[in-house]
Image 1 (tube, one colour):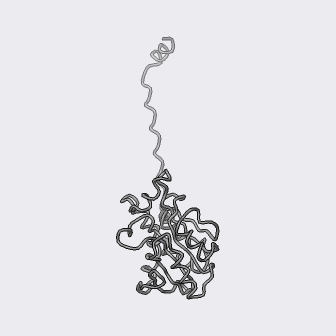
Image 2 (tube, rainbow, N blue to C red):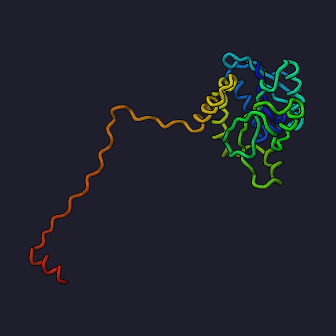
Image 3 (tube, one colour):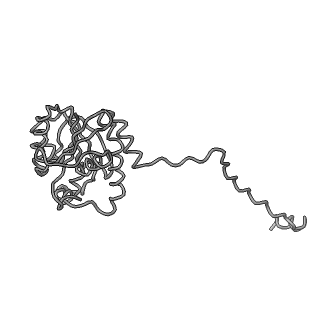
Length: 225
């Protein structure tokens, strides 16, 4: 079994926050792939289903962000999972809005949800880093992540979540490149090809020079003016 965890804070007050993009990601996967209903377990809510050949448990911890590791650790112990079975979807200040990066192991970079998971299960798990951009000053970070996405963000956010759902099966089987490609196709769809046999538009012909109707004497006189 694979465990996909989306980080966020529970309750309607936080539902649209930038900090909750991890919740949004696993919700998109559940909806697109016909997962079962969400139910309370492991100090959070879970939904089960399959992504290709893999049985996958989706988990949204409800311990609030800073204690996410309590929920994640409980689920992992119950199913006897290792960090290699765990992938965490979380917001990333150091990536531009709409950018996505995969990471395996490493530090938590000050993210309190990851810090808590590190404390409970170690650091050798996978992460899907979901860019939300940075407000520009560290004193503005708390307010920024705990506010909703702007209306101008909705277009790229919807495309990003659809791309995550498209690529979720590849991610579950460990094909990170194909997963990222699925996201990229949603974010930057290929331009439609021209139908075969369609002729290129002919370049416009240069206009012909107007005939010089002056007499030879007039032309000669102009040269000495």
